[in-house]
Image (tube, rainbow, N blue to C red; front, side, top):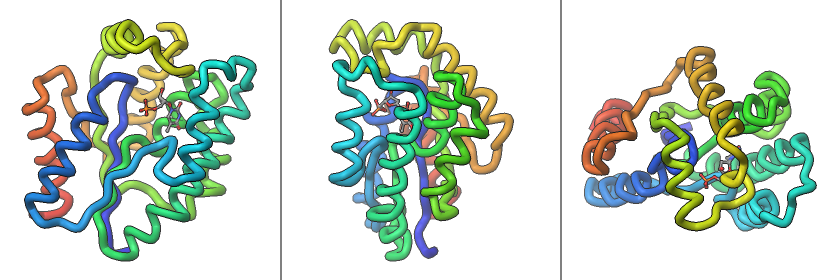
Length: 207
Ligand code: TMP
């Protein structure tokens, strides 16, 4: 595959979505052929699945169902958007990917990292990021900010214990799968976080 695949990971409210837009602006300036996408979502089917997963009315959703829906949205994303873009030589930036499922469903929902990995592997067609930028920040503070501001979606509404498990899960995953993971200090200013991210991206793309 000719392109490169870069994903952004981290707890809710860690600033990934703001930074990914700014990364896009930078790539445009540099004249690099790229796409920006997100999970859950990124495709028409994936966005529909996203609204089912995050709907606050779906309180009866079981953890296995949730994990399968994330995996289904991801599989469609890989099939319809990520593989074609990589084949065209594009740089693909995704706000979240497989590590989110391993941390949130594997550890947060206590389904187990290996079990969640296996249902995802079925739909991934061997695709793995060339670079994972992990936005490191204490999740308690960011969640408080986010839920106070907007009420929060079904996952954000989960208590601090859940989000603490997700954070611990990420820490465990970084140790388990250190390949291609770079830690970004997301407590810094937007400019500093952007600069740290660009530095890692440029190392990969050698620009
Ligand atoms: P977002 O707020 O980053 O768009 O993500 C939506 C929520 O979905 C967020 O709380 C993280 C969660 N999530 C999972 O639990 N598992 C996954 O595989 C993904 C991609 C997101």
